[in-house]
Length: 399
Ligand SMILES: [Zn+2]
Figure 1 (tube, rainbow, N blue to C red):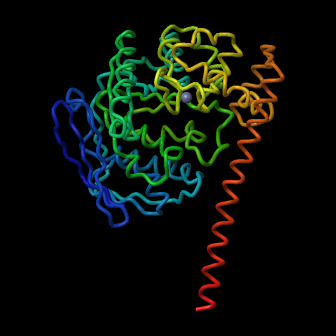
Figure 2: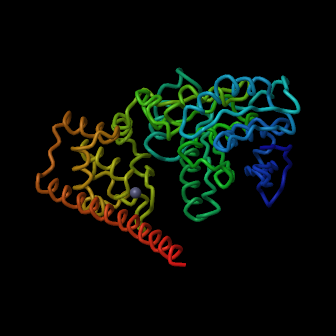
Figure 3: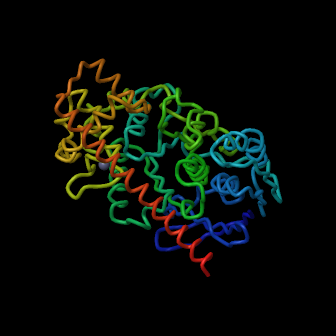
């Protein structure tokens, strides 16, 4: 893989920093876009951000990285001695080398603000936000809320993305924080998928704005007990990984590892901002921000129901859809040891929460129907493939 020096492109009020790259002989461009007012805070004299963002792809393909420009010497050292070995513990990742035309020791300019946080509107980011604001003398001082679109969402779904962006922008305004949107096409280039690439995309991308803040806070998706448990999710190595992705004099900081998802939910559900703006959904429903029946909606609503606050969330979630789907979810909660389901089971026990047996039985039934349907679909595919192979073989023999 080769990474070349970048240049700016302008379109109306937006500025895009375009970095040409070559992967397996293919020429591509890594693009990062911000509004023009943030351009002056962008790092353009070195390719640190692009190297970090492209690292998982290079490691999956087993391609060494050749930087046809400068990289911070300290970052190159951190990646070689810490970042790459850690990422290599994840699924199907290979160790690679980074070679640069220039290793720079010139310090980055002094940043305008202390800390920024990526904010999605989910349980993890709301929990981190309120914890940071409530304890202003501990930890970094939060100045900037960032909307990081590193999955090309605005390109795929501009209207829904604009709604999400304006929600975060308004929240930042009410809390008297700066708001900054940054987006990139890294997801169209990376070959490893979101689970393995989110930490590097997020931190590498955010620190392209190293002139804006010193510390970048990542709201943790897991509590610290999950450290090293899931080789298909970069979150499981994040506490150790983040610092080795930061440029010199900057600091990526994981927040929320001290709390389970259930504890985070409990801590935020009384907040008016959460009751009007919580956004956890994997899909959408026409009349509600959250569909009420996807895995993340179910997980969140189950906790809210156990804590007795469902009535506060009827405008934000489709509670009719939830009531249809919750039986099979509560059944899974009873029998599964998946970490989030187990947490919910323990919460229900602690709160003495009872759910009617008839609902659980119905849930068990619809869950088993789902499993049977899935099994039939799977075996049909296999059988069909085998029959086709057999036919092809017979045809060759008879020919
Ligand atoms: Zn949903």
